[in-house]
Amino acid sequence: MDTRSLIAVVDDDESVRESLPDLLREFGFAARAFASAEEFLASGCIDEAHCLILDIAMPGMSGRDLHHELKRRRQTVPIVFITAHGDETLRPSMLKQGAVECLFKPFSDTDLLGAIQAALQVE
Image 1 (cartoon, one colour):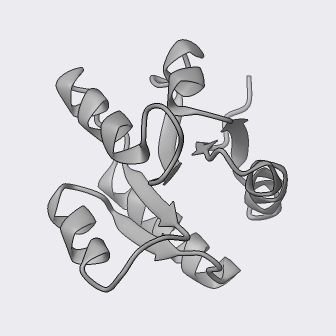
Image 2: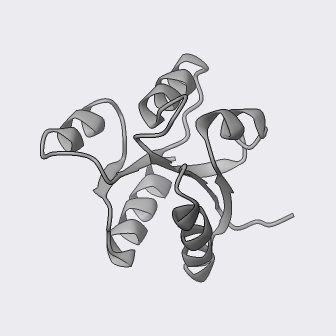
C-alpha cells in the first residue's frame, strides 16, 4: 500500500491527465487521473484521496457539480480547482464555496504545489 498522500486529478483534457500525475509523483505524491467526474465517483477513490485537483468545465458533470455532490455526500476531500475558462470573479466565488484554491491554466508547478500543500493542511 502506498502511504504517500493520494492526489486525484479529474480533467477531461488528456494532456492534463498525462502530465499532472507525473508532476505530482515528482513532488512525492501518489496520483490517479480520471477523465470525468462520473469516472471519479465510480472509482471508489473518494475515501482514499487526500486532495482533488478538479477541472471546473467538463462535459457531463462539471467540476462544480462534483463539488456539490461531494458536499451532499458529506465527503470532505480538499479541492483545488483548475480551469482554462474563467475571469477574475471565478476564483473568489470558488473559494467562498469551499475550494482550497482555484488556479488558471497554465499555472506554475510552484503554484500547484503550494495549493496542494495548503489542501493537505486543511485535511
